[in-house]
Length: 268
Image (cartoon, rainbow, N blue to C red; front, side):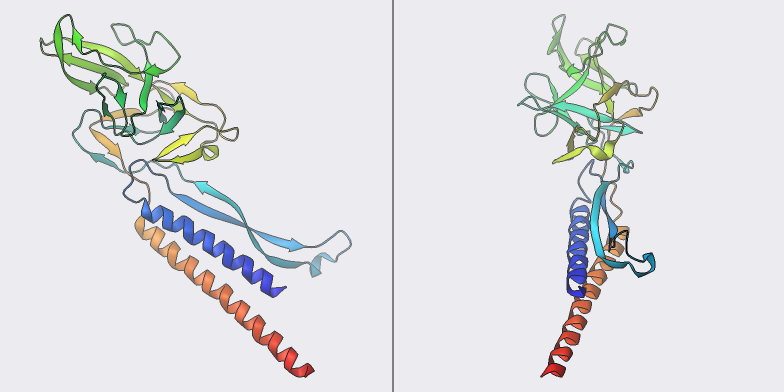
């Protein structure tokens, strides 16, 4: 029994090491959220067993939980680098029609004026009237017109309330749309799909949309990007602990082997 108990411990320690290594590898990934492993003990018993004689048989992986705490914000000076100063996810739509959620606000413009991330997923927002009031509750692609009454596009800014403001070479400005933010009842239920993107699942519940700076949704900060929330010092301490756990379980297997060998020697 001790062999299998310690083997489970080694497997759990290996899982812990893998999660920690993934966190450390993404310490420079914008919008990345660290994960942690949670374990549960395993016992063997029945209704007829004396509860004072119930024996533990090791531990099992219960869950790998994501930590959605806000990471530090780095100032970049680029108008379409956007950080959420609080709760909320940006929504993007991929070229294949998938809806993705992210905290990585590194955006730019493609050749057609759509606001996209580095993988050409299009940022979603609301259509607005001339004063910036949303005219729809359904997010759609945000696109900046190349001209305005004959004037050429010059620059774009993002206000704290999410309004996307385009400027033209004649000095005119128009509000193109408002960036939509999404929230979830259980963000830990979101499915990681890579590149600091998540997808909604039955565990997370559907996305609830709102305006930046209203209710639970944070203001937007133009010219900044949210960095990874990984604390490298904390991860290195956890790495050492997981390594020691692995070594201790390996030592327990070695001790059980020596005991078994001693019993075999007694019989011979």
